[in-house]
Image (cartoon, rainbow, N blue to C red; front, side, top):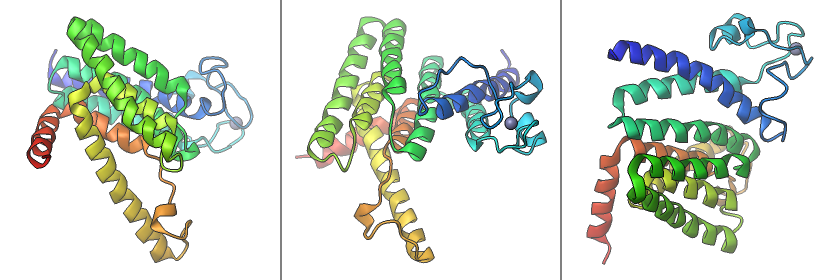
Length: 264
Ligand SMILES: [Zn+2]
């Protein structure tokens, strides 16, 4: 297939798929069904027609408001359409192999709603992390046989254990949701890439926390009394680390090489 055609399909398909992922991000924390009822306005309940569901265009033409009651449509849906289209397009262009591209697309489909839910509600629901873990083990087993299956199981176990220990002994720092999310990530990346996932997650997490703290100082409206009392969700940074590990496997070899050099 010519690259331009594949890219066009990825952008369009990503927009439609992103619309569904945005609905997941809104409905899962509310514990409502993700399929029934169909798409409707959260304010007046009017059923949305196909012309209200065209990715990007509907939101822009209606300026983010319901056609009937003019209530505000949650920004999650538009944001999710844009991010998914961009991610699918980038995967077509830059994925090191078709298999890694497919694994990254599956993982992204869980990571995006989980990131939005973690930012808004500070939790990572098992309704998304557990199916993601199962899909990762299944996909690795089907695509790479027994070796892939063992890699996925080891990745899940090694991802789960360290964060589960932190969640048990220092529950203020991390929750069990983070441990299950890293287990799911390990099923896609395998055990060797977990060091890169944690390196990217902690460095970007620390950087973002510092930025927010400094912004708070600047605005003189700090939410907490110290840097350490800022409650930052860790899930979005784990997702960033996971997608880096899948799409740029060379980085994990580099990190492991550095770790082996500096560790006694
Ligand atoms: Zn409405």
